[in-house]
Amino acid sequence: MQDFIAQFLETSERYYRSDAGPERLRAAAVDFRTGLQELMSRTVSATDAQGYVSATVSLGGKLERTYISPQAQRDLGATDLAAACQEAIAAARSAAAAEFQESVGEFPARFTDVDPVALIRRGRL
Image (cartoon, rainbow, N blue to C red):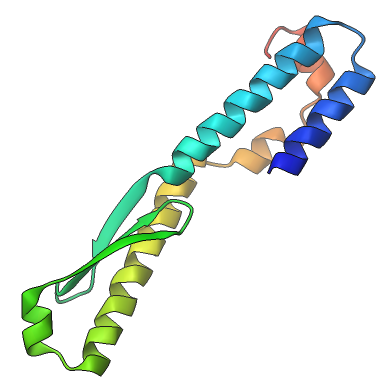
């Protein structure tokens, strides 16, 4: 992501003659990076089907925490407990992916054919 932003800024500074254009693009890129970092740090939780294990992951997919209920420790053997943990983590990651997609939407498709020069001329950046 950082390489993309650096390349974006280098290209914008090379091709845009206006002094304000690159600064506006830089500010937009910084805002984009900050927003993406905030989005990726949000968390979601899910449990296994029986409710024995709860897992919390960031929208970036990082496992933040797990909770194993006392009932799981009492009722489940090691293999079943491991399966419950895997199920909860998979459910949490699936929920995180869905929330990320919902938050970002069709981001790549919206910007594939956009000309940054045209956006600057129209005052949209």
